[in-house]
Amino acid sequence: MEKNDKYNIKVLCGDIEQAREARALRPFSEEAKEFLVRLSEEIFKDKQAKHYSDIITFGFFCRAKNIEALKKQYNLESRLGLGLIYHVAPGNVPMNFAYSLVAGLLGGNASIIKLSSKEFEQTEIMVRLIKKVIEAVELKGEYVTLVQYSAENKEATNHLSEICDARMIWGGDETIRQIRKSELGPRSFDILFANRNSIAVIEAPEIIKNQNVEKQGREGRLERLAKDFYNDTYLYDQNACSSPRIIYWVGSEREIEEAKVLFWNAIHQEVANRYQLEGVISVNKYVNVCRMAIEIDNITAERGPDNLITRMAVGELDSGLFRYNVAGGSFIEYGSREIEDMEKIAGKDLQTIGYYASKNIVEEIKRMILEKGVRGIDRIVPIGETSSFSLVWDGIDLILRLSRIITTVS
Image (cartoon, rainbow, N blue to C red; front, side):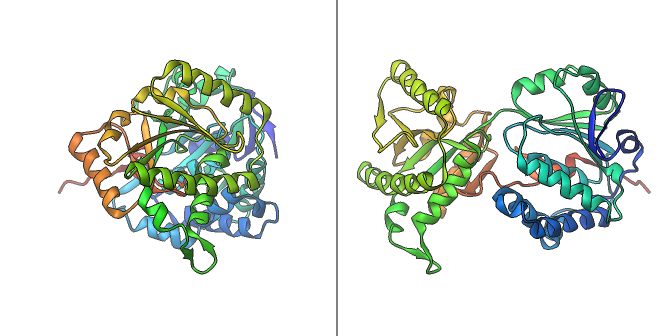
């Protein structure tokens, strides 16, 4: 039942003071596994949940088979959770809070999660299902506490920061700056996910080669790619850090031009069927194009049938291009025969590379990162998986960071 405590915190589920006293669990405990598996089952049975692909994806992540596969990646014999994790969920990705909860639970911890004040139907569905599952499993309610309060409520942030063993903040940068003004306990620490940028690498010959190839006899590979690219970008209005904004084409000039036509035609068909462009975003995209045309040399606006997709081709790369980020399908394109130019934008703010390319290109990218000592790029994943959650995020292994190791000397 929803209630407010003395710090004017709306508690949607769980209990703050009980969470404070909860014992640490072993990572991947049976209690946590039972909760997540039951939650997965409830998701697949729920009529409302079935309308949201991001909820269904989360349901698959929480299946017993996946949890067991994740567990096998770790040596957990001497590890124990930290205790209490205070999570601050972002306002741009509805299901992020649920994945943050998974990391806390599998790390062996009780969690207090501050939900965004933005209204998302996915959040409402998940809160309802979480409350239902908590009543039916061995894991007690103090391990899952969901709260909401105003960002201006500093007393609430101060209190939750004071009692937690670790504070996990999912950006943006200004949110992190404000919350870090609230002091942690002497042994507590922050896990911070600041604003990041992402790109897509597309090998032009792969597009050309696969233009007429059906996948499993049902749909063409370009149709599948269009769906995957849409989910990485338009599904979150390009607001997620993992959403590609720069498209790095690899191939000859002729190959790239041919592949662009094939690729963007497929993307436009997918976007036209699924996406509703809001007026304010349309204006922002136009203003951004004008700004880029004024401020950047050697730039070309690529023509399209409408403004569902806005494309600007540049003749040179630099990290300043990420300043021109706007939502709703705005892309900067660059072409080269080699991947070496990528180093120019591979600063510490570059998070993810989504690729549609041969294995050789992927290996070249990884080799470039390691040999050049690139400070950015934490993930190299196929297009369609840039927003897929992993227990290693931004180069941080969440299970290891959210647990401690007990050493024994004999």
